[in-house]
Image (cartoon, rainbow, N blue to C red; front, top):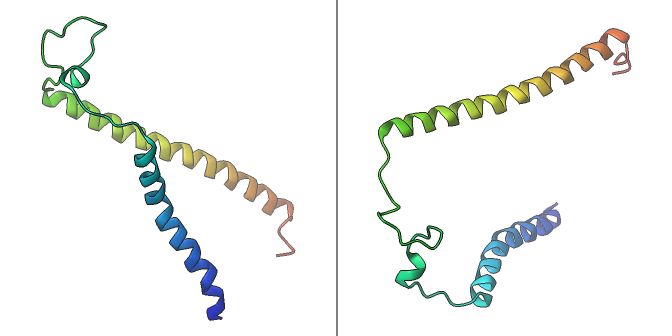
Length: 103
């Protein structure tokens, strides 16, 4: 019984090490990036920016963003319920026809 845990432990070890190994290899291979003021300055179609691009937003924007996220998640759950409803209709149809009598 304990012999069966070996492959599972190896799988979890590889799954834990693989992301860090790929990030390390990517860090070794990528070109060196040295930020200069020109590179970190916001780009506006070649025109010198007139103001700071990191402006402040009003609280109303955050309320609208939260409402969008709430209704977006609600839409995802409604889509899931439609899918489950179709499966339930098929299950009831099979049950009424007697296709599940062998169970």
